[in-house]
Amino acid sequence: MSDKLSHIHVACAIIKKDGLILATQRSATMSLPLKWEFPGGKLETGESAEQCLQRELQEELGIVVRVGAGLEPLTHRYPTFTVTLHPFLCDTLQGQMILHEHNAACWLAPHELATLDWAEADWPLISLLAQQP
Ligand SMILES: Nc1nc2c([nH]c(=O)n2[C@H]2C[C@H](O)[C@@H](COP(=O)(O)OP(=O)(O)OP(=O)(O)O)O2)c(=O)[nH]1
Image (cartoon, rainbow, N blue to C red):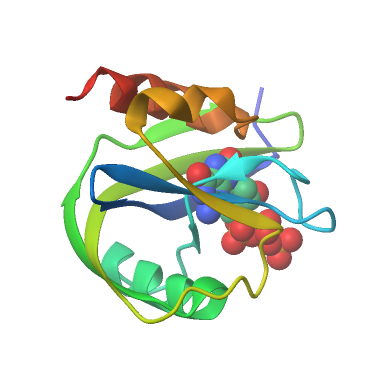
């Protein structure tokens, strides 16, 4: 049977600062309302994941980061679409963070991330990050 549901590719930033990781909460009017996520967004045609992250982080938070290593992509099937997340470790925060689209943001130690209500696709990543020193 063919799968007619859309499949999107999303680059997301795991931004570390002083041992803490940035989590952002989607707004009540976004898809997956009020779920926590790593900031980022859909890859546009012809765009690298790094370009996508810089563009999205500027738009969403007004910040510039250094994009580092990519982690293993992870795919999750929601009831109405499938997402493949392409996570990147990022650092060197520049700019004053302003929430242009998100409802909230917070910095948490890796082992504290699981206290938030994450988008379902992110849970394997949360487990992976919690295992890291
Ligand atoms: N940025 C980001 N998106 C995530 C994560 N986990 C996860 O399931 N997603 C989903 C939420 C969205 O459906 C999609 C990201 O797309 P987006 O934020 O650019 O787009 P959106 O759905 O808010 O915008 P739109 O289609 O309503 O215009 O990926 C994550 O950790 N970070």
